Image 1: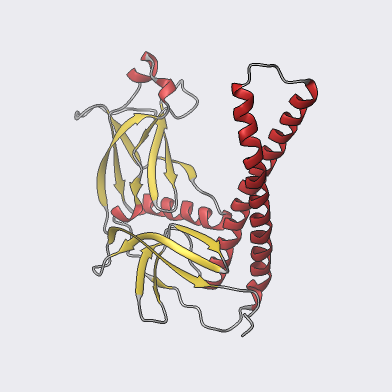
Image 2 (image 1 turned 60 degrees about the vertical axis):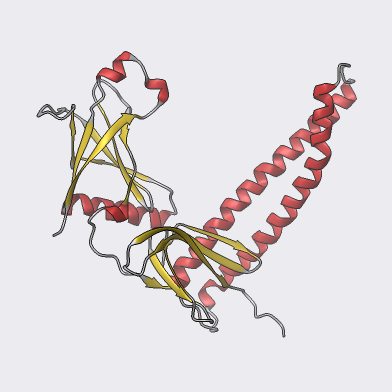
Length: 279
C-alpha cells in the first residue's frame, strides 16, 4: 500500500500553558507514518463524523513518535491522540504526570496525505420526487421560515435597543428603577432572540446535511462534481452547505482538471422543494 512519512512541528496546545513545566516537557517534532493501520483509524474517525454529524473526532493512537529536536532522542510513555475533521488531521499528546493533552501539531489536509484514491462523486438531481426525504424538506422549509421571522424580529428589536444602550452609556444621570428594568428586559429579550436564531441556524444546517446525504450520498470532505443545465461543470471538495430560498448551495475548495485540489473556492446551487412550484 502506498504510504508516506511526514514530520510535523509541535506547539503548545494552549497559550495559558506557557510556563517552565510545559515548555520543558514539549517535544519538537512529531513523526507520523501514514501506513495501513493509521489510515484505517482515520477512516473510522471520519465514519463517526458522518454518522453522528460531528465537527471533530479525537481518539487515542499509538502510530506516532515524538522527537526532541533533530536527534535520536524521542519521548517514551507518551499518550497520543489523533484529531480528525472532515478535511484535516492533527496529533496531540501529553507527558505524565499531565492529565490533559498539552501540545499539538498543525492540522494537515487529508488530501495531502497518501490515502487510497477517492472517487469524485456526481451530484445529479432529476425531476423525480424522492418520497423518503420529503418530510425532511418540509421540516427544513418550516425551520427556515421560523428562522427568518425570528431573525427579522431580532433586528427590529436591536434597532431599538442599540441606541438606548448607547444613550445609557453616555448618560450621566442614573436611570429610575422602572426605566432600568425596561432596559434590562429589552436586553434579555434581544439576547434570547439572538440565541434562538443561532440555534435555528445550527438545526437548519443539520437538516440540510441529512438531506444531502440521503439524496446524493455525500458528506463533508467528499470530492464532488456537478453539471448544470447549461453544461457548466463545478468540481470541489464538499466543505460547506447552506439553504436559502429553496436552494441548497454546495461550496468548497475547487478541484483542478488534473484531479487535484486547487486554490480557488467553488460553489453551485440546486433547487430543492417539498412541493412543485405552480406554473
